Image (cartoon, rainbow, N blue to C red):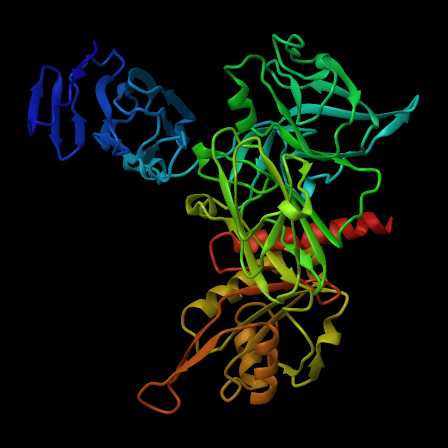
Length: 593
């Protein structure tokens, strides 16, 4: 038995045969549906998208757990929208000026956000509502969030990425092995999402060759759907273009297909799926099937620093990765003063543009869609909008030392992780002489050869410092046998009260492997300046009861003393820091073999 509840804004309430619906200011609540015990509980509801307002009506729906929900969504707008609930793996396109039926089972109790998953303007990101699923059993009510991961797929992340795909030369042809694989990809920040990646990584490994090289790609489809590979921006022979229904039939699951062509012209290109037909190309790209393809000219003059970024999107999950990672897991650009820096930016998303903005510098646009721009025509910018399918090469001179953001200025994208930084060598960290909690004089050289995790605080801190100290203890536990490869340093900003003895007692409450550091006012000022730390003394009623406002950042420094990353105090920081250290140690071990 299906009860249909029609929402009428003109009415404040209405009774229906099998239940009671209360409509008030855009809220619908459905309770007590009088269905036979043997029947499945069902609900039909009319929902609309208000034209030109990017709003759901209603924007709050309440149902009982286990209900089969059938929403008839009328999109009165001139634009396509989408209806998505991440926790129910639901994402439905809503064409303009039409009604679409969306059906799902409200199988979990809790509050869940439904949102527009199609982007063509900032208003779509604010187009959100709430689905409340109620349960008679309080133990079944869960907080909003993703389902626990239950999968046989491998979990991989940025530390598993291969930057550049290697090749073999067969009869004068550069031959590459490429596959499309399902994978659980860890984008960082707790976002572990089922994805499809070339060679089981996101983005796919960069293919780099020289102009006019003969290239052969031996491609295997390990997905459970058909697919193809398109070589975006390359002037190749038509049969190798990778378009289903035009130049080839789709490559079925388990099949291998060979693409062969001349790499021409030089420039920043990329490869991506064209799906099995035009209807599924966007979904396959959103799942992650893209990678960079760089063709160098024969006379290529490499810059001092070069980075290639593949910009993608998982709109349903609210994240916008750079090279398969979201901030703070994105890799910064490390430069020396005077370096010529080139950044190749590829928008491999299916729907959104990215205005990429660099702080503290101006850059020149030296190539568009891989094609060089004559010097007299090169624009000087600090923000550059990049549409889907476009590539831009920009260059700048590193002439302004600091720690500078480089991010998408569509700020919803930045909030979703499309942030990284340009970091000058030796800008963070430096020489210091301090006294440890045992009373020994130490310098930065005493910790050489190990990673260093440096934070600043004071023992009378009642909130952030104890939490950070607990996180540091957790990091050491997570590292296990590798804990001796990390020096965990806690520098006081209150040397007047934090003597070595006080620090020793304080550290003993957390983990005795942590090193407490104090010193004279001048010595503390020197190390504070070296790490660009902020702190301010806050006076109170008596001379000895002052507090401090201070930086709560933890700085990870490499074995050679160079900056690696910094981490704000937040849930999951211990796991991320331990993973970053372990990744560095693993890579060093591979190199030494």
